[in-house]
Image 1 (tube, rainbow, N blue to C red):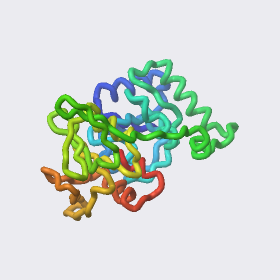
Image 2 (image 1 turned 120 degrees about the horizontal axis):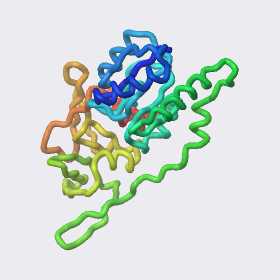
Image 3 (image 1 turned 135 degrees about the horizontal axis):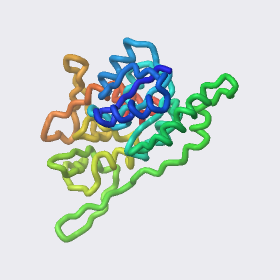
Length: 260
């Protein structure tokens, strides 16, 4: 069996490789990759492995974006410290979803699950149909409460033009240019807000569709956003999110995948 490990923490990658080989020394680890960009380059230049061990949070973003930039058909065992991505992971041909710290017993069970899943005696599983069947309805955040002096004011999500992070604080900028500090992080907001209306452009900015005036194309496919109201700094779409951003602007189905 040929496998690829995608993990941005070197010690975690080494530990995972060691456990895999202890479970089955015949397994061949083709590559250990630490970022989205390295993974995309590798998959574009090599045949798919039999199995991928994939962390979700990588140094340059969420690993889901790998599959927007490279045609990868191999099944996946997710290895992550976060449990909120389980359904999205399941949709991407996921064999299993292991929460860190991973034990040898859990890993052995996952590898056995992969072998059973690929056995010719086993029926083919329609993962998309199963995902659609079990996916629960999603209720997105509709309002915020913000502190104004000694008062607390409710503000509708529809008033938000974009959110940004600075000095460890998250700010909401409204369409009327008023700005408020929030308790939630951008990561939290990214999962609480409707992905058809809000997009995580980069690590610092989460933008509303209504705030995007246009995007300016820069060399190397970089996109600079023109937002309303005008932000205090230039806002570029991260390179690994450009494809997803374009799909989001077009209202493409399953745009949530691009948000990562």
